[in-house]
Length: 457
Image (cartoon, rainbow, N blue to C red; front, side, top):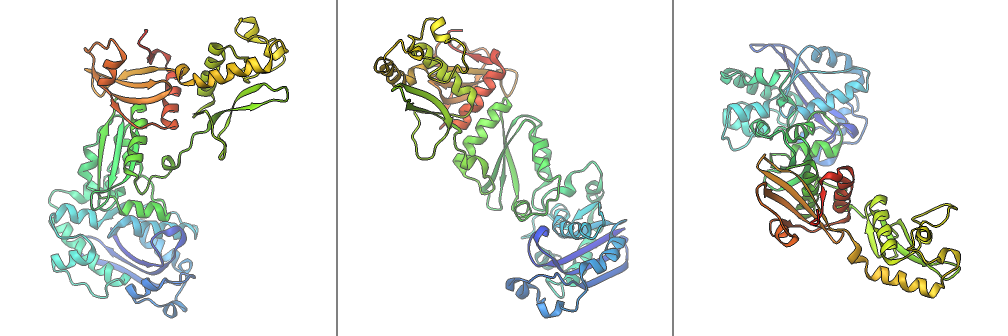
């Protein structure tokens, strides 16, 4: 049993909009068994452009029933049927949302006549209901009204069933098939070609422009996860309607995918990415003079109106670099907040602190070394590379941190012998860095120390 549905609404997403008209046609594949059609009072204004499009005016809905008054009838018609609509996820999201608000839980199998038409009538000028009706000589009366569009969708579905010699309808209804959840304009064969590997994926709009970039440990699973729920919010519904194709680039490791995602978001500035566009580093290295005149090094959350000497993405990264400065430049770990508490100074015990914390050194002499330490900061920043698996068995991936900065990354043949830093850099692609990317590499190197190497080892 098929329930062919069409609705008119006050807007494009269910969570904040109402239904103004609803039509359901029960169809068994040969004949129409039942039909329900009604205007609906949405109890909210109808935007002017929707009034013009549909011809449904506010005064027409004043005496119309509320959705709650017809919810039981709607649920009874739909609960045991396959839900069929043109761009099914739109209609289904509204019906499901409003039924749930009335205490009914709808969990139907779905068929999208847009997706099925693309498979069974390839090469047409367009797949909107109006264009399909013109191309296939289907009469379309009362356009942009629920009853007229539902009747046209019934006739379209009849043609789909007659033409479906390869079983596309049944394949889409298969419980293991994800196709009923896919956006209406995304070809399923593109999903079938996505590998189960780490990488970066791109969603494109109708003109081929990238509108979203994501990273994944498992590309196929992650791409499909975008379509596994029918979120009723405006942004999600608009996002799904604008996806026309997907492409991807494999990466050797999840870390490479994380980094490449950052790079691509900064390069392409996709419409539906937001978080990494506005990323700001979390911590900064600052100095201040205490009441005894000693310059203190301190790591704190970034301050908007104060310039830091260096920025860090994590506390761990900051402590590592400050500890290195303290030891190499003979500073006091207590005055630099590396050592806390009342225990004896570790720097004095290990013979690199001259006793500033105990008043055994003048502030002037100590402050000179602090300034020297800040001046030499670039020299003490770490240089290392992360070597890991590549995209296939014959290669390895390399990520280089040089003087504390993310330099670049790439893939090298396993047989290639890298004897010095310059040779390694010749085989890497240089990318612009930010603190988030650098922090990812530091955290990964901390978690997997065996993969963190220097030219010395």
